[in-house]
Length: 107
Length: 116
Image (cartoon, rainbow over all chains, first blue to last red; front, side):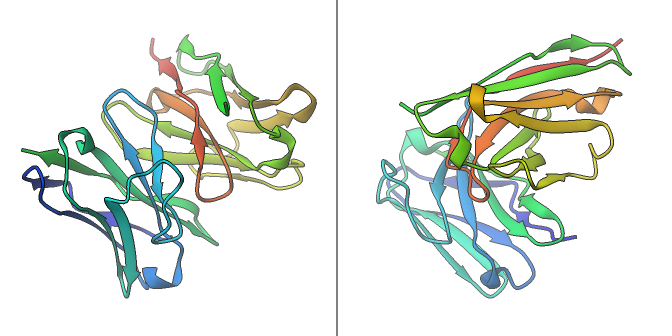
């Protein structure tokens, strides 16, 4: 079965750039999607198909995907960006796979 | 405004059953594939089931296969999850989510607690 690996936590100072990675075997061959989940709230799609942003998502959020690692980048991180971030792919055998999630702290 | 609202959660004893519903509004429900995703307390997201727009294709995660049944009623703009033989490890918030992949819209979730 396909697996995605995420770091447990990432910390960033306000205004700095946060990078959250998602590892998987040849993940570059898959479409990677990213969700933000603030405490007590439902997930929100912030990046789809590696690097596309849904309407309403700030330009500060960007994504890339190469080799065995996909990356969500948050430029100029703000306190409101504190949340759990999950990567997700569709795999033909496992169907839907989520990473375990990364907790972003802005301090 | 596009909206998904889950209902039907609650407390149930191990071995019991529960039926969750998800009511859609603000978009053409019959045109979209739908899913159930759950989140155990303090844990990550776990996809559990998918249904195509015409319910011709259905998938389940191994963790619920044979115990849970996904269905939909396009005339009622509703998605369902029949959960049987519930276990303590099924305790979670259950979300309905729109799309095949990615999930562009999510409900707020409904909490299911399985405990004696």
